[in-house]
Length: 178
Image (cartoon, rainbow, N blue to C red):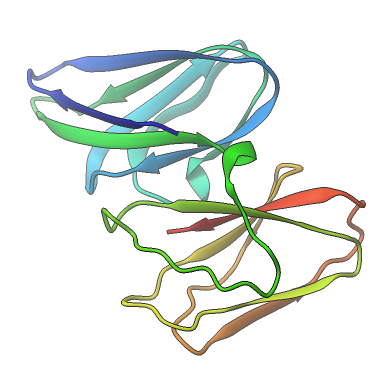
């Protein structure tokens, strides 16, 4: 998704961003500002989907939406003011991974989340091997059929392995690195 920067300069300000989703999608709200007092709310065809969720990265920022028009609202409580940045991304646009091919990157800013995807068949085995890291980030496996499988934070030299069971052929998996 595109980077959005803004500032709530007056107490009580709300910033609203509207967008349309042409078909059901799995989105990820990437909070790029380290301020737990900032919140985001998402409303759409079914009403309020997300209500005043804090600006932190994690599993709670993964949201399934149906086709329709949406409004994303940014808020700070009470008399607070401050700048913010975020990115709203569609997992369908995540970077594709090729098994066995190392991936390197940088979290910049350090609070960003990188999204990747790969396909697997029933019974496939896979593992993630963190070869180098400046800090222990968290890996989250997001099954694109809208289920979540958290993985532990990994440090260099550690591996996380899993065997997929009862998975339909052609399922795409998403990975959030935050």
